[in-house]
Length: 150
Ligand code: HEM
Image (cartoon, rainbow, N blue to C red):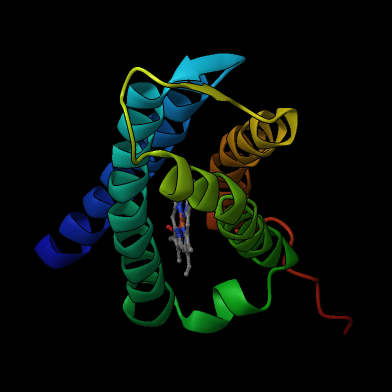
């Protein structure tokens, strides 16, 4: 019971950190910014990476050793939609990560032009992150599980 609560709590904390990190990047990276801002955004990326591991690990624990049988989730397309969103966020975040990694080094006062595509990637991540809790509560209620025909 206690372990279940701790796992769920860690899942939520991880989600908060992911959202905060991506939002922080969104606020920092726009137009033309000093290299120091890129370096700061890159530090958010480290927090993001750690939180992704926490969310994934606690998600897997709830899936395979939580209070409900694994098939409760596996059979639900809404759960698969949530997982797909999670992996799309991970894929889309690769571009900003690589850009920040390449542009963080050098004179902190240098100006760096932020590509429009990068801003769109971060916005897409935020959109999917907002959608995921909705999918999570829907699947948690068991909505979306196909009804077996008699
Ligand atoms: C940023 C990504 C994620 C978000 C925003 C998210 C969101 C949530 C939320 C809000 C809940 C609580 C639902 C409720 O109790 O009503 C939850 C539970 C859960 N999540 Fe996630 N989640 C994410 C990633 C994952 C991943 C990657 C997995 C699987 C590997 C996963 C598996 C689960 C499971 C199994 C539950 C338990 C649902 C239940 O209580 O029946 N989640 N998630």
